Image 1 (tube, helix red, strand yellow):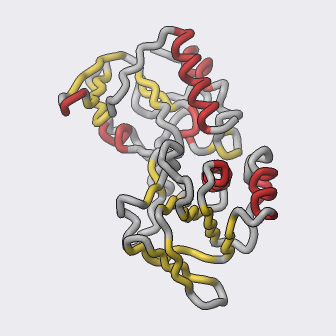
Image 2 (cartoon, rainbow, N blue to C red; image 1 turned 180 degrees about the vertical axis):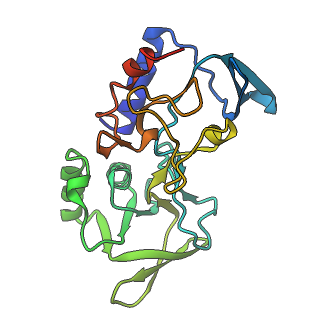
Amino acid sequence: PTREQYLEYLNKVSSRLGLVVKQHSKVVGLTSNDKDHLVHYTKKRGKIGEACAPNIVVASGGYYAPQLLGIPGEDQPNVYHYFRSELPFHNERVLVVGGRNSAIEAVNTLVEKKAEVIHSYRGARLPRKKIKPWLLPKFDKARKRGLIRTFYRTVPRSIHNKQVKLKSDGKKNMTIDVDRVFLLTGYGPDYATLKSASVPFHKRNQRPLFNPRTLETKKSGIFLCGTIVLKWQGEKASIDNTRGHGKIILNNLR
């Protein structure tokens, strides 16, 4: 499914189950006492709301925070770390950096929206086995039709207004003119909430310690769910292999 189809599915599930979803709010802290946990979250106009419960399930995902490149200009207003399909792309020159699912799906959408697409990837070729198979046919077809300009073995060095400097492996560096830039170069989990609750972390890999049989962290009553665990049963955590997390947690609530 595409990003839009997945979001539509989540909305339908939420409506069918009658879930109470506090939109336009963000968790900014999690504190605990001997019995309960207190979630602090932002409300409209900057006010702080609170919710108290004996059990907290953290399911913020393994792709919450973008992996920044640390280059000049990546914080410009025309530079994005998440794809935004609602933007006007028709006849715009757009650079997409990255070679995994997010980048390839963004390229496909940009082609459909009649943008002039430029694609940069650091590898000599795409890691096709790590890309969702239904994304590749559209991408390959668009490349053959000349709708995508791809520069392999290149990485951005700087962004200044509407110019991007790409460092090329073994060739001269190049400067390209663009209207927008999508740096879709990977993401990681946000552990700030867990750290605010004093959840113990592994000293070596800085990941939260949890019991794989119950998904409860070393902080009683706080559970991890979904891809935030990063690895599950010896494999990279994904939507597919973490579907059973909900049942595991339900069976181990306090």
